[in-house]
Length: 185
Figure 1 (cartoon, one colour):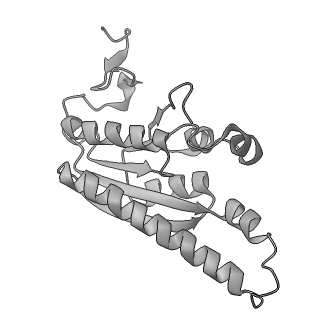
Figure 2 (tube, one colour):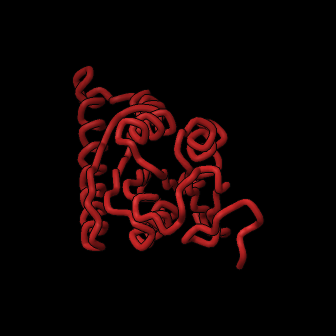
């Protein structure tokens, strides 16, 4: 498939940029460092496969990011602790379990990407996902952001807004959005 006039054909058939970015597609530095934000959903797993394939486009390092959504944590913590738990004990235990679970999943993703020959720098932080994705991408000087779209339920998206949409609006880098499979989660 030919790229439209005035654009360059990217190594991925769904990604093209205006030539004005000034970097030829055969430049090995184009996607040298990318940020991959994951929520550990099936859609994020599909996005991870794209990250792995970007190695052929010159990707050497992946900044792996998972953000524990402050808004979701506050909703979970609003549930009553019950009579048996001391004040604050339930909240601390629940946050600790969330963090431990996320660390284990992040480590599994890190190992999978390293097995593909990529250098990985993993970050697990608390915050608002879209805001933190853009902030970390800038701080790490990444050349591309890869995210999954609709990794969560449509109800959550309605209430919290689309993370991928907000990243696209605010990012200083190109964003590769991998959509979920229709009929999937």
